[in-house]
Every structure is written in structure tokens, then in C-alpha cells.
Length: 626
Image (cartoon, rainbow, N blue to C red; front, side, top):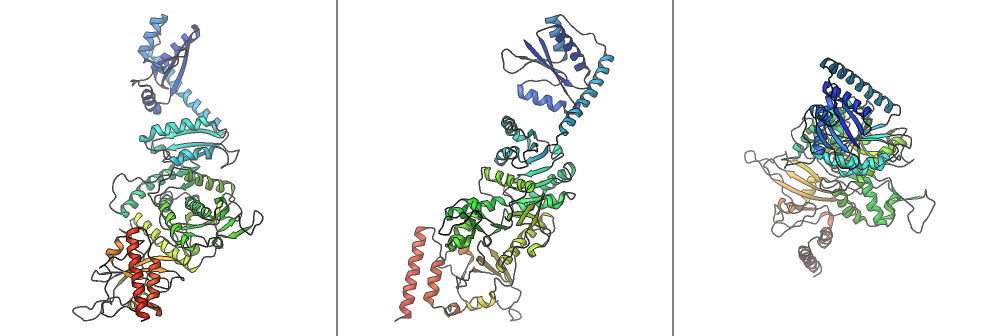
């Protein structure tokens, strides 16, 4: 038995003539079967191009006829167009058609009207049970592959809600999208109404109820500056924001995820889609929060699900502050045991403060960097978790970190997307404003807000480039007095007036924001009008009384986070008198503290530094006790 497939434009008169002939053959020949496919004139060319590309055919007009050998399998055998089908019918069956042109045109017009009515009926049947329309951008990313089963299994939106998933990406990833669609259909989830792929931006986010933006900007060439990166991100968000404004439902929920400018992208989507409620656009910070919980759980040798209330403040994909002051642990195996709801403060369980300040902070900073590689399982899980909380509420009393539009909470400037603690309830979220924060945390939030404000101003063209964070004093220290105490150069005298120049600039360039309240590692850059720079290293911690050491630019360029003073590179004092130890410390005590602060990475360099420090310490003790 042979089955013929006849496809064409709904308003094509030659398709109408071939269709009537095929119907006559099917009625009168027992082994002749015909399957008809009609396409709207607006979609015909794209459909024909796709079917020919799939089967390796060459055909450009309507209709197209091919033969499928049902008893042999394999792909279809192209017969040709209208004339080829007429010749085949006359040669094999001795039947032809003598339909007049007027009749062909009238039937073609009826076919088009019938096709439109059938499509409307299909849409109406689908609308009887309204599925959630979920759009995922950058759908070729691994996170999308892992996210689809989580959205379709019923745990996120409930067991009574069907979903239709739309995958959006550029045409170069068409084969990947097609493979994802086929695998998703093979899952046969009862709640998965449909999965479709889209490569045309004009059709993006149509009737979207949920938009998940996975886009991580992949810079194809070297970008000259950070400001140019921000402008490139803004251009993409302008396109997406306009499409969401135009095509999506008015109550659409937008979730921004990824590793690149997450806060800024959420803010720009909000800017270019002004009719969308600001509460419906959020940036996902749960990835960094869960990573912190996992590290802490490994340190305590427990399940990461037992670590709760870790707060991520600030810029999710940049400088952020992981706050452990409210963190608690549940089901911790120790001498004190209690029911499942019994908790203990996490910082009381971790006795290694150096680990929190060093390894913990370093690993988290690498996670928020663009270079961190991820296979997509964790990002997919956190997106699904946020959506589940949004539709089914977060656990009572539990803190969730989320990037949202600031309205002045915690003295954070308004108008920026800032990660802060929230709870989900009744289909919405609210900031946990009763959270108490320390002075050190408040100072950290100011620094983080400064960076986000600068990103926003560059993106909107208000300033040409980002400026470093300035402040006249840092953490209660009087820096000028402190530098004078260290016998550092005073501002030089002007050659004409003989007076000291007063307009010196003080820049504070901190490292990764503190993960433990009260601990900062920072550099103070002093810039004089004569373009001279002095660098002041500072470790602000009540347990480290030594205020720091002066380094020069060459030394710090060799390793910003782990500076080592090489021979001949130390900044010389302006006087011949030796520097006095600060706060009355003995020289031996100061050297001992400096030796503790030296990080040990390279065995050879570190051993030499330790030997020199031990020799200096021994000489100092001999001088002190003759």
C-alpha cells in the first residue's frame, strides 16, 4: 500500500485541483491513501523550506506531493508538484482532471476560509483548559535542558496546572532546540501540553505567563572596557524588554538568571517594559545562597538542607555580601540534640573563623564570577524553587534571598535591583524588613549599592564610565592621622606658593565584601594632584590590632589579594627616622603579627619570606634583650 501526502497553501488553486483528484482516487482505489496538509499563506514558505531541508528535497512551489512507502519504511519519496501528480495519476490510473480555472479559484478561496476556521477551533479547544505559557530564552543552554522536567512534573505549579513550554534561541542552535523538543515530548508528562521552539524574535514571548531569561552574554570578541560590556547588555535587554511589553500578558512573571550582570539585566527589563509590575520582575540569588549552604554543610559534616537563613546581599553576579549572622542549622549531630524544629546558630558551630574569612569567601567569589563553569543542574533547580515558592509559598519562617527593586529598605538607595531577604506568600513576595543588621553590614551595603548605581548610570548613559567608591574615612579610622603615624609622605608643597596642596583624593578599593561581620580587607589609594599614588593596605578586624602596612603599586600589582613585599620595593619614609610601631606595640609583636598575615601559596617564596621574618624577629628580640 502506498500513501501519498499532498501539501500546499490553503489559497492555492492548483492545490485545490490536485486535492479533488486525490479524493476521487482514494474513493475508487482500495490501495490508494491520501493525507492532506494545508498551511496558511503566511507560513507556507517557511514550512516548505523546513520540510525540504529535513528530507533533502528541492521544491519551491505549491503544492508538493510525496509518497510514503508504509510497507518498507524510510523517508518519503518526492513525487513533485501539481504537474507531476497529474502525470502520475494519468499514467498509472488513467485518470485526469478537467476542472476549469474559475472553479479552481472558488475552491481555493473556500479552502482558505475553512483552514482559518479549523485553526480557530483548535485554539478554542486548547483554551478550554488554559495552560501556563512558559517562555525560556537562551534555550540551548544546559540549564534549560534540566529545567524542562522540573516544570512539567507538576511539583512547581501544582498537579492541576498544565504548561506549554516555548524555547527561544537564535537560528544557529536550531538543531539543539529540535533535539530538546523531541526529548521533552518523549517524557510524556501528563501536564506538558506542548513544547515548541522559536528562532524569530518578532514572535517571542507571545501570551507569556512566565518568562525565564537564561541569557548570559557571551562576548564573541574582546570588549575594551567594563562600560562597553554594560552597554552591550543594555542593548539586548532593550530588545527583550520591548518584546515583553508588546507580546506578553500584563501579569507576566519575569525571572532573570545567569552569571552576567543579573541585577542590571533585571533592572533594564523593568525599564524597557514599563507596564509590567515591578514586583513581577526578580533576579535569582538562590544559586549563590545554596552554594554557601553547601560549603557550610561540608564544613560541619552535615546535610546542606539543614542550613537555613543564609542571606545574600547586593550584586548577585558581582560583589555580594553573604551574611551568616542569622544563619541556623537543623538536625546537626552534636552533643545537644532536639526535635526536627530545634535549631542552633551556625556561627556558634563553626569555630574556624579564618576558614570563613579566607577559603569560604574565595570560593563564593569564584562562583559569582563569569568564568565559573556550570552544567546547568543547580541553576535549573533554583529557578524551579523560586517559581514553586511564588505559586505555592515559601516555607514558614524561612528566609529567601532575591534580587528585587529597592524601595529604600535597609537604607539602600531606591531604583536599583538589590539582593535582600524576602518571603513568598499568597502568590507574591515581601521584604523581611524586621531583619536586624549591624553597622558593619550597613557599611557593606553602601559599598555594594554604589557599584549597582554606577552600572545603572552607565547603562542609561548618565555617566560615561564607572567611578570608584570614595569616602574620607574607613571603618572609624582617621586615615590621615594613621598615615602620619606611619611616617608616610605628607602632601607636597606647591613650588610657587610654598603651601601644601590640600586637594588629595582618597579611594577605597575593597576586595570581595565581607562574609563575616566586621572583617574587611581593603586598599586605600591616596591620589595627589601631581599624579602620585600611595597605597594603604588595611585589614579591619577587632582581633587584628595592627592597622596595616604601606605597599607600593608594583608590589600590589603582583597579587592584589595576597601582596608580598619584594626586596627594594618597599615605599621609603620621608624622614631618616625609623617608623614607630603603632599603638605602642613592640617591634617584635608587630613583626609577629605581620608574619601571621602573610599568605603562603608558593613554597619557595613563602619559605624565604618566613626565614626573613624569623631572622628579623630574632634580631628584634636580641636588640630588646641585650
